[in-house]
Length: 134
Image (tube, rainbow, N blue to C red):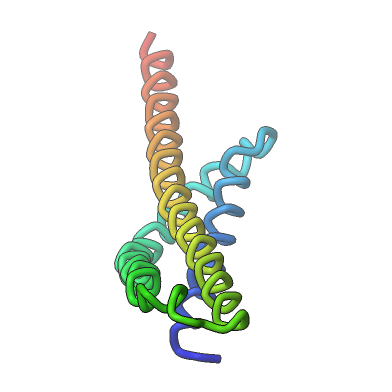
């Protein structure tokens, strides 16, 4: 496996982990496990923050791949296999850009939902203490 592919594999696994965590946090019926899930997700948010520089690096790689294709190569007698290789490279770049966007969106959603659930839990505890005082 090439060294550049390792970044894409890591990003793919991170996206899968983020999706599973979001699914578990938002599934109805898991209220009894919610506090533990929120604590576990809060513990993974800081390590997942390392996705941001990785995504930045991979975006630069995608842009570099799109920009550095020789501009006159398609007109100056490229073979059919070269054209197919260029089209395949462009499709892979587009898919990689989508993966980067999904990774960043899922991280933002995970961060927002976790903070929202923490705030709801705190407000519930405050309500219980106010009810006990009355």
